[in-house]
Every structure is written in C-alpha cells, then in structure tokens.
Image (cartoon, rainbow, N blue to C red):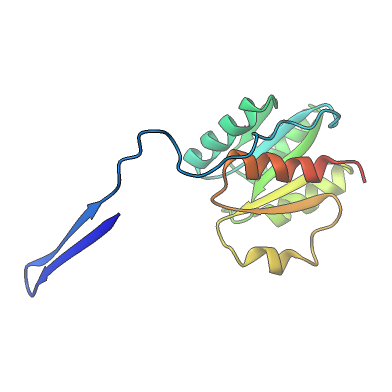
Length: 162
C-alpha cells in the first residue's frame, strides 16, 4: 500500500491511502484452526469485557469453537453470574475495567471458586511482564488484539491438565 500526504498551512492536511486489492483471501499461510480442548472441564466460559464490540467478537470466536459462553460487562456482573451456581470452567477477563478490574475479579473468583481457570486479556502490551509474578497455574495472559487461533491456543494451554 501507499499513503500520500498533502499539507498547506492554515488549510489542514489531506491523506490519501491506497491499499492493494486482495482477491484470494488472506495473503499469509494459516495453520489449522484451533479447536476447544477435547477433555476440558465441563462448564461455561464466562467472558468479562466492558467493551461491547470486543465482547461480541470474542464471543463469536469462542462459540465457533464449540464453547458455551456467558457474558458480563463488568466484574460485579461476573460475580453475580457465578453466585447463580452455573458451573464455570474458565473466566476470560479484561484487565482494565471500571469499578472492579480483572485482577480484583480474579482474586475473588479464585477465593470463592477454586480451580476455575482465568485468562486475562488486555490491550496494554506491557502487562504480561508486570503480571508474571501474579499469574499462577490457574491463570494466563493474552494481549489484544488477538485472532481466533491465538485465543483458542492460549485456552488449550491453560486448560491442559498439569
């Protein structure tokens, strides 16, 4: 592709973006799509994400792999869902959310529901290094943006028996 920029003082700027036409799909090799792990614990994947479009896209990725999904827009709604008694195998939570962030939520989840796996997601790339000491065997981290293969592979790693 190409980007052309024209700028005149007092008149603003004009950006012209040229992108190549792709007729045959993605121009890179793809591996076989990941699937839900065959022997993962029964239960629901609870997706906790305050950004509605991101929650919707992630739900599609997980549903397409055969997971049963429950959604919560924040940590408090997630705890309310968990208190309802539905068996949850995995909580996928955004790290940065208003009122109750993902770390606070995970501490509460692991205290009340030991054994539940937690996958943290965030669009702050530096979070993985900061979380290295905080993540235990029940937790993992995935940086946004991610595609279906990266998400499902990370879940497979986390759900694999120790």
